[in-house]
Length: 224
Image (cartoon, rainbow, N blue to C red; front, side, top):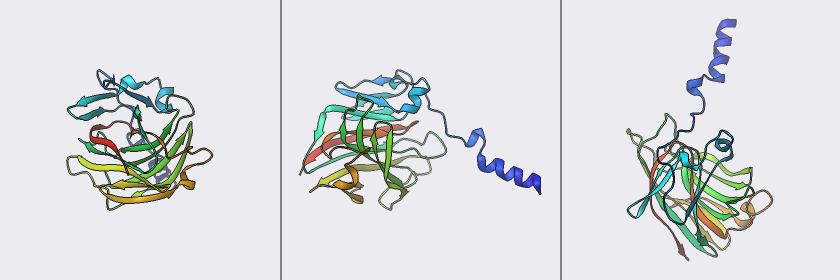
């Protein structure tokens, strides 16, 4: 019985095959689109990775993202304020691992080049989940816990999935919109504050997890 219990504990702790998959490194990496910038997360930076381990390039009117470490992509000229909608369509070509990695849109971005960067993001997973968080420097605040929503499309048998993800800001309320449906709405008081963001106004851009192969099309903002 003791051996059985020890085996169960070992299974729950996990083996290397079950552990978090390592960040890949892609060839000819870096940001290849004029005006765009990128920042990878702190963990891969500590591991010696950089934005050259991912590739962000133009693909016609769309963007092609071959992602190693998780990070942010933005253009300082893309600023939204007042009442607005931002959106993009994310096509994941195939899941690179046995579990899904998310992608989506951030708003309210400021000081993105600094160690006190701020932003609010909504991201979706290929299994039908979504989550909403803020970054304020190294502080990460979960505003809507990861969970499923019928609006989020799931990957097919080949690991491919397409979701339109965006934000709708109106009268101080920020709503994450997936495939035309509001999946969660947050009052300004829920997202603006200590260790969150300063304003719903700011830079908007793309948030991606690691090890993704994406085409992002229709990226843009409309003023309401």
